[in-house]
Length: 490
Image (spheres, rainbow, N blue to C red):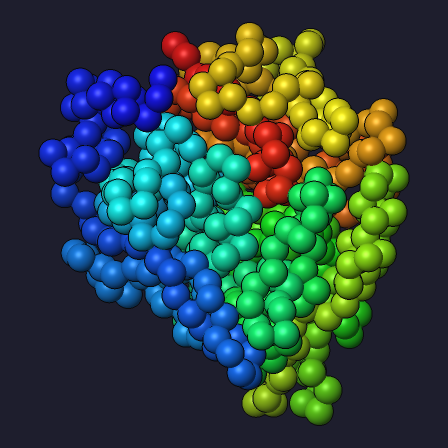
């Protein structure tokens, strides 16, 4: 069905406004707690001395509701941070003002298909799309970014991404750090020309590998140093890079105190010396800088690792820094105040655990092989089709299933961060691979599958019927077609 026929079809269902804007099925059902205009715009920003850098970014303003629920980041290409509470209803009027079609995906949020940002809903330049949904997710660090087919990598790289932070009563009762002590850290890599222009995809090989930039940016800034005081902080880290993987660690040897992953708080803090963070994954850290040196900043760094046996390991020597290299991400300059070091609460949240015995396919998990076929990334040998769904990609509403992502048996194997739309899952097994520490605890929506690995996840398809996506969150792989639909039906 072409776009005109598709719009006519939606109009027959009452899903297109008189002005041509697309509306989700439940729009207008209730007055929203927060009504926001979110525009995709062309802009320029002073990133380095000299010429400004042309970017694409999200610009937002509150039309109705608490203006504090939309937090602007100064001197950053990142979009505003949404800060909502579980149970609040939000209306977001997306206006496309860039010269490409676009649509917004609310990464990690549990919403109906009309609100999920499927590329079949992409709107042309000058058009609008209105989202309206109730936030049902537990407290956590989620995010949003464009999702038009074949253009996602380009638009995210241009600057179109932002955080969507959810809180709830359970989290608020813990007394975790808030305000200036609740720091978002969006990690991205970029390459700039001598005149400060963004440089993207200089060769077909870069597209096949996944783009790697030569500068590491935090919140759109290079080589940042954060001025902090002694006492506890909550660091919300998002790997917002197109394809780069990070192995996080502290420079002074202290452990990472992990309190939350993609889908919110863990049951208790998880203390580890380092952790892998793939594109699309999030991790919340508790860190208390009390007792730290005031003369020597503490650095959050990425430790060296081996990316695998595929072409990334062979070709990345042409990129600086190559995938798997060690480098510094950000520094924290500590101001001494005489406070003593504290620890995070030892009990964080209640966490439901899905039982593999209740999975309808417990004896025969669905298997999805992640392969490169003649330089084409595929899932079970298939590439993306806008509405196609294979028999093994159909699921029943209310059912629980086990899926296995298998990244084995290919000389061209490379890392694949696999993201499933519309729900959160739990990792129940990881087999083979290099043996690094992965973010496999708590509720997840993205899981990093390294070459040689088989990763099993369990999920429940609750609440919503319709068409959703699952794909590699290496955005170049996604744009090349390493993405498929799955259909939830009654």
